[in-house]
Image 1 (cartoon, rainbow, N blue to C red):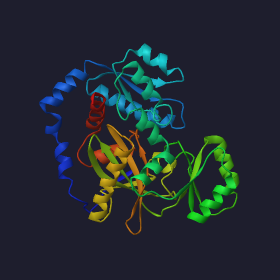
Image 2: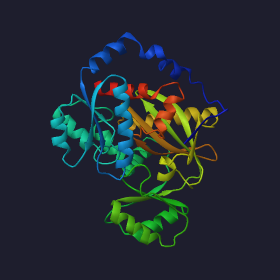
Image 3: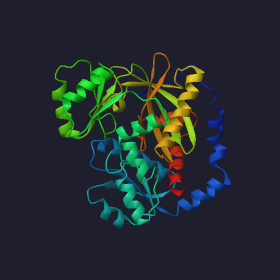
Image 4: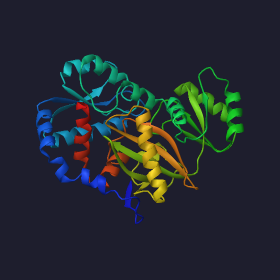
Length: 342
């Protein structure tokens, strides 16, 4: 990751910097809440068994170390298939969920914690499930008139060739092949021509289940962080070698340049922030999230998904957006922790 604060200045962000000033975090209310939280046993749930396990472990370790630095009583829990017994034995009062993919990002862990009566960070059961399901998310975007690229679902019982024909007719090449319920760009492929596409789809469906073909929008890759009810500055992502923001571009140091605030006209910038918050709300997001989008060459935004448990590694987007308004990593972790009480 290369972080560059762009010379271009987007809409004023004074309201954000004021909220995240030192005074905000040293308020009597926050201090009293923190004192109460420091009496609690906090479990950092990480790892799991999804394709994003390694990223979750990196995020989780960072969060765990941050909580320790701040004086919280915490322990790291590497979640396994026997997570019910793990959590029960840990005797935690609060769960800080930093699992990526299943079972932490699809509502499974959240449902279990609800049954156990254990407060947890981030979105609830329904919002987590919807955020993980890209097809349902896109349908909600369409219903709310939030622009999203055209797409054709390919379910496990769909005729693959018919779906490809429909995608070719509706939006043509290039197009993106995506799993319905994976994160971190796992399984995503850019398709520029029809050669071997049917075979590629069949192979991907065997591995991931439901898929969809999505219109490829050429333009600026961007993301918007949401913390509480605050919209963070828009982050522009510029992959240096990859054709799009894939797994390698996301998690390999030096592969992507971060430009913040994004180089967008003022009207577009404000529209993107407003729509990003609406997307967060439409799925029922809580605490924090990251909304991903592409802005085409005519400055029209197209929203891709809402990530209800965004990465917290040293290369992740959300910490970079928070840093742009003077919010430290520890302050970001603290704010997310506070969401468990709301």
